[in-house]
Image (cartoon, rainbow, N blue to C red; front, side, top):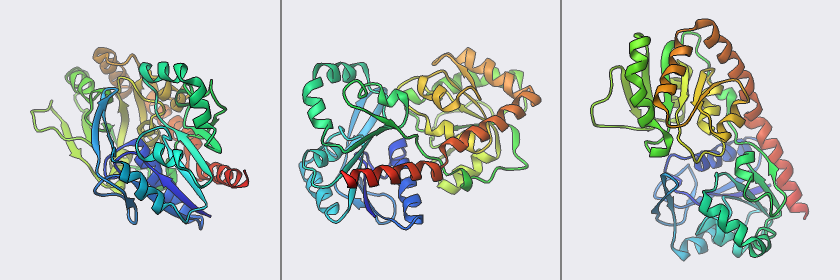
Length: 346
């Protein structure tokens, strides 16, 4: 099967959708399928078809890097000309995903990733009838979590297929530093790094051996004691850093429909402390410690409780690793293979 994987977001940026496109492309290729990865940006995965420059659009506590030029859609359609099925990630996101959907000439699978803002939810309700006509252009609609499905499910049927993590690629370290806390993500307000850094002095006071590593972000201003910024790193380096940590912290403040970073921390065998967001709670399913979002005191208390209790931390690590198998890429790609075949059959 020849499958076109379309990201509306800059393929050279760190992000959950881009990560899933890359993971699926690798997994499908390993199973003998041919994939064509299409998206905007100046850089991207090997052999990706880059179709235009991006514009940074602020919203939802973050910045969305998307292509707004109509010619990007024309280029994307040309790149997808020879595929059997098109997999649109965020199918309503302009210009690329939405543009390809409007001019569809192939079977289409669409996957919703995001937790829509209140404004988008209101728009979905107000435009229910035309939106249903548009969504019916998609042969099979999926979402990565109940949160991601929630705005669309009242309009059309949605199937849940979770985000994928390559659990087998993570070498869980025997000599992990149990006092190390890892953060993974961009330095956007809704990712909560500021909340974690605010909590860190309290953590250090109660757990003097603790250290914090920040992966995926850099700051040039003064950081609290024992905080190391690693910035953007390779996949292999990211996995190594997580697997050598005892605790993974996801202090996000909102707008998360799934939590790929949480699943990655679990796959690395870390005990997880995370914000009590519905998407994170879906991924954790009770195996981590959760705290109210944006509450630095509660976050500090939860981290201290895990760092200073060896028995509890060990149990959390084992439970997290077991739960991560639910999201292993082998299982997820099998579900998508069935969905692609169904789309072709329609």
